[in-house]
Length: 227
Image 1 (cartoon, rainbow, N blue to C red):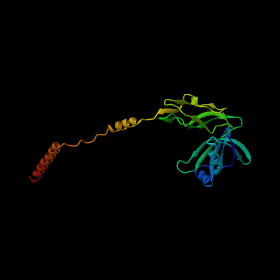
Image 2: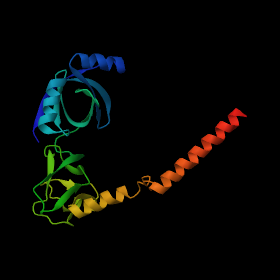
Image 3: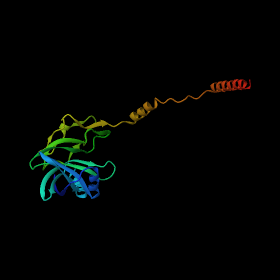
Image 4: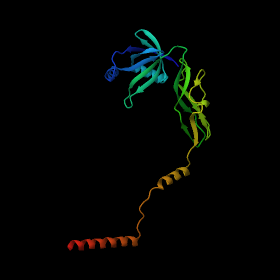
């Protein structure tokens, strides 16, 4: 993974109002912590940081320029607004060269499984330990030609050199299952419709009997009203 350089400014204002003012200025509120240091409240240029995350992923390694002093950092958490297209906050972890860190890396499924199968991906990320200079951007899992019934666990995933698995090796990552047939789909529709009960149409005799009963009831009511 390439290392990116970015200028960071020290923040002296805190709270929601200060964070909004920082974002209105085109910057992102951030906190840098780790290795026994006191947390530093920083602001990062939004456009530059977004470009770095787009290129390197969410485990981006940065060299922060804090008032002329360089500091190596790992992007630990990126909190995006749930609706609007901006980053609300970033957590950065102090790191040193040659250090190993544990990170969650995105799993990307590649290839086409055997015909008449479906791919179920149970894990979108797996946790690994890697040198800060060799954090993988993503980990590919190939299902090319895999038959129904194939299961790929975390321990089966091929990792880049120098990277070790932290996730439970028995954790299911990808499952290849048979695709439903037309008969399966029809049976499912029939099962769903089995609980629906419609009113049965009345026969002519039942309808006539019902009408007679209704007429008798009306006559009775009319007689009672007159008396």
